[in-house]
Length: 115
Image (cartoon, rainbow, N blue to C red; front, side, top):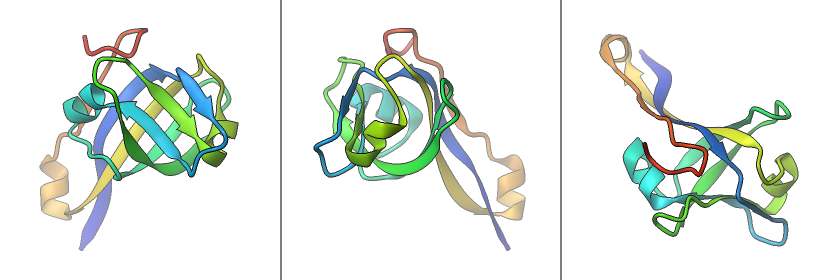
């Protein structure tokens, strides 16, 4: 049997831009993506700490070192510039493996830079 567990979390990043007229997704600085062990096009669950919104989308590679966190397309309606987000990925593991698995947690600073 398999269970779904947290794979990685980028905690408390701030939205830096929104773009309603876009095909969708979240743009994330590739330094954050790499640090969390995430990948462009990977499905993510987003939680907006400011308004309680929870939604799924996928990662688009953002320019390294810029701290960009951009909500695109319909997701742009889920938050405003400055809102704090948690970006999470999950993985399916066999129960024995899941019991030992440790997710990767990243806690960037207020400018979305790795501390």
